[in-house]
Length: 105
Image (cartoon, rainbow, N blue to C red; front, side, top):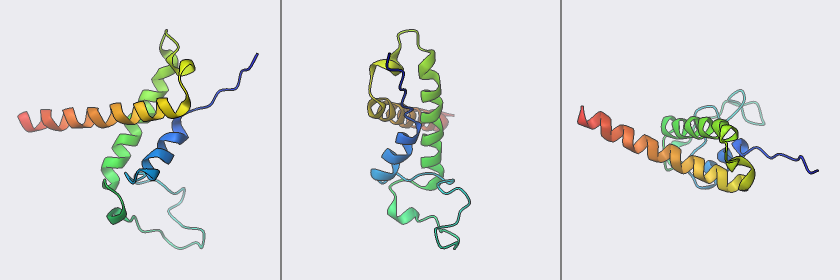
């Protein structure tokens, strides 16, 4: 039996960073770079600000945390990259519908 399991959570961060969407507010463990200097969040290099990217990442992680509970075994049927991209897409779509609902109030 091959019981190797790959978790897609880290892949979410890699995809968000690679596509230029940002890595959220907590992208460093202590906020320092390799030289020990404080990092500045460079939002001008990212398509989304830190709060929005953080929100998408948190939502995507929540979606991924629930995939093993699916009785159809979706988490075992698809590669990690597909699950990560789907979670990011669903998280971003969820943010769009919520902002529309806030505008309606």
